[in-house]
Structure formats: C-alpha cells, structure tokens
Length: 368
Length: 247
Image (tube, rainbow over all chains, first blue to last red; front, side):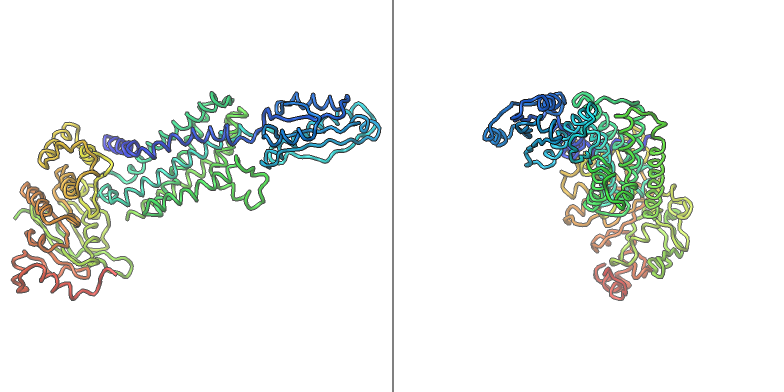
C-alpha cells in the first residue's frame, strides 16, 4: 500500500509539473462550456427582427403579436420603407424581416390565400434557416387557429419540419456532450501518453525490474486522472447550473456514478492505445483520431444520429460516448432515474469490461 | 570465494527458430564485478532480461541470489537493482523526489528514506541540487545518481546495462569509483559495456558471440591467452567470427 501511494504521489508530481497540460486539463471544460454556451449556441433567443406592415389590418396585427409573444423574437422596429429595411440588414443588427403586403387580411378573407415575405440575413445560413423556420411555424400556427374558427379552408402553406431540432431547444443538450468529450479527452489521451512516456524514457524497464507489480503501475496511473476527471465533471456541472441556468433534474449521485463508469471505459481505452505504440506522438494521434473524432461525430450532441445514414448509425453504437450522452441527458435534463437508463448503463458497462480485459491481456503479453 | 550469487547452467532462450541465447553457463561470486561483453545482437540483453526475472528462459537453469528464475521472479526482483542504458530517472521530479519514489516502490520506510537520501546526497555532493529537477543536472551527475538510486535498497546484485553511454572519460572514471565502492560493500556488479577500458576494470569478463559465451576469465588472463595488449584486441579477435550483427 505504501508503495502504491509513493507511485500515485509521483504521478501527481508529473501532472502538476507539466503546467501546460495542467492548464489544458482544467481550462478545457471551462472553455468548452463557455464556448458552446455562449458563442456557438444554436438556440435562438431574443433575435432582433423588423416588421414592415403595409397592411395594418387585423390579421397582420395578430401575427405580429404572436411573433412578439414568442421568446425567440424581439421586434426592434416597424418600418415602411424598403431602403430602411436594407440599411437595417447592412448594419447587421437585424437578422430577419417580416413583410406584410397591403390587403393582407383582404386577400386572406376573400381569396383564401395571402402572402407573407420573410427576409433573413443568410450570411449565417444555419441561423437564417432556423429563424425562417420559426417564423413560418408561428404563421402556420396562426393559420390553424383560423381554420378552427372557419369552415372555409384557408391557404395551405408549405410544410415545414424542424429537421434537426424538433423541440426547438438546443443549447442544453451540449452540456452532456461536453462532459463526454472532456472525459474522453482527459482519460484516453492522458493515460495513453503517460504510460507510453515511461516506455519511451526507459523508466518502464526499471519499474518492471522492481518488485512493484505491473498491474499496480496501471492502477496508480489511473488514480490521478480519475480524480482530475471527477473534478472536471464537478466544474462542468457547477458552470451549467450557475452560469447557464441549467438545473440538474435528476440524481447528482447517479450522474457521478455513471461518469465514473465512462472514466473507467476511457482509462481502459487509453491503456489499450498505450500497448500498441511506443511513442508519445503516436499515442496522442491515436487518441485524437481514434477517440475525439468519433466522440464529436457520433455522441449525438453535434450531429443528430437520427439523421445519419444507416451505416453511420450502426457505427455510432460502438462509441461509448453515445451511450454516456444518452444517460447524462436523461438524468440531467429529463430527470429520469436508474430504471430509465439501465439498458444504456449495461451497454456501457459491457464495453468497459470488454476493453479492460482486452487491454490488460495485451499489456501482460507485451511484458513477456 | 563465497557461494555464487548468479549461477546459470545451459540457460537458453529461443524465439521461434531463432536461438537468442544458447546454453550459457557461468557463475558470479558475491562482491565480484562481472563484465558481460559482446557485440550488438550477441544476446546480452536477452540474457540479462532472463537474469532479472523479466523473461522466462526456454530451457536450462539459473538462480539469482539463491532464487530460481522460473518460479521465484518476485523474490529475485526484491534482491536486485537495475540501471538501463537509457537514463532511468524521472527528469520532471527533483533529486529527492526521485530517491523517495524509487525507495518507496522498494518498500523502504520513511525513516530509512530520510537517512538514505541524506547519505546519498552528501556522498554525491548534491546538497545544493537536492531540490532541483533531475532534468537540469548534467548527464554525468544524472548517471551517478541513477546508479546510487539503483542500489538504494541494498540489493545483492545490481545489473548495469551500458551505464556509461555518452559520458566523458573523467566522469566515467568517477562512475567506476562508485561501482568499486558498491562492490566493497559486497554488492555484486553485473555490467555490460562497449568500452573496453571499462572491461579492464572488471574482476572477470565474459564475451558473448552469437548467443554463446566464448570466453570467461580475468582481463589479464584473457590478454595472455590471446597474446593481446588490450581488451580491445581480444574483443576484435572474438567478434570478428560473429555471424550475427545488429542489422
């Protein structure tokens, strides 16, 4: 036990002496949360729009009120001049304009067909797309209320589906994603690099000649990264609760237990990578390409898995982060308990056991 | 002569068809400085790995400090020290931290560690540097430190795998002073080297060619036997016949 502690202490020295890595380890989750939370958010809130209401009738007013009532838009001003409209867009303050032609209500009542023009600033095509979809949805909604009150069928507008974001709510989903990403990065990369470093520097030989058991070498290397990762989880959760106002709806204990499971998965993956290479660079590259990329692509928080072609959907199943993402989303956002996520937990657990057995076996044969 | 601390009998290691080490038999007495020479690829490293308990022999017998290399590798590990050709301390740890770590994994107690590290630091004249990172020390000092750390737990035998690679002759000489010191204390030194002047410092040397030990005697006797002026000539005479080489 004393030997083990001496080893763990040494591992902590390694971590703390390397200031740059340390900064990365703890800076990463903060930067990611802030970036995803504020800069890269794809949720639309309080977007400034202008309204050009040439009709000024009951129908146009009702729609404008509806738009204003939604949390997504804030009507900056109403203008009736085409050139002003263009100027507003050029200034960049306004992302969207809604134009009602004259006789809007008239057309609707008598021709059963009226037009609305939606103009979006498409310099950011994704935002433009989302914004127009939102407005269209609001208009459609208005149309529905009209239909309910009248027997006469009114104009059928183009069908719009919110393909990528049916709940019109995106920002919250990234927190579990960032957790998965940070855990994978820290654990896989750091363990593989730190084990390979011993091999590269020749210290591994000395350790193997000592009475210290090889399995304990692995264990004591895992301890610091387990602790660092749990601290990272705590930081992310604190940031999301206090900075992003995203409450944890489920059990915090369960959340930490599941995170520990993913950490162990990632540690065994790191071990596996370390057994297949002798150079730190290769280990780092393997962790990046082999872990980070699949985690980003297939966890489901950046690109929805449901919209992927079938082969990719099948591949996504072998990415541990995908299951962890589902688990954390269920606990944090939906507030579900263990009974709702036992299947995902079991899959993740199975992966962990498999990876651990394979990597330990490989590690052992490499020694002989 | 005391009972031998290293004793091998027809010890062999095969990798498939390749015979890396072919039936080597020798004995090393306690406190002896034993030079284990041979060209690259002659099988020195493989032989040494077997003696350290890192690799199980294919056939033959060997005992290290009285323990069997097949069954008692754990006990062997407790009784040997090891220093590799690659510099084997942690550069991002200080001198004291390195001492404490390696002492720690050999199970030394805190008071033992305190006492030993103080002795060691004084002996090497590293008092001012004890809190410096090892990476900042010159190579010669690092290697002396590495050797001292390798014998910190007072092993019966210490294995040195080309310990003086890349250091100047003066430092090498100082390094050998440390080795004599340890040998005086009864620690057996098992050393591989490519420097033939170092071979002269050994009590006895063996020369491996193509996996077998070709000669084993004191440097003086070997020079007589080959009517050579230096160990260099002895080495060339023997290594010329080798079929295996590094490439």
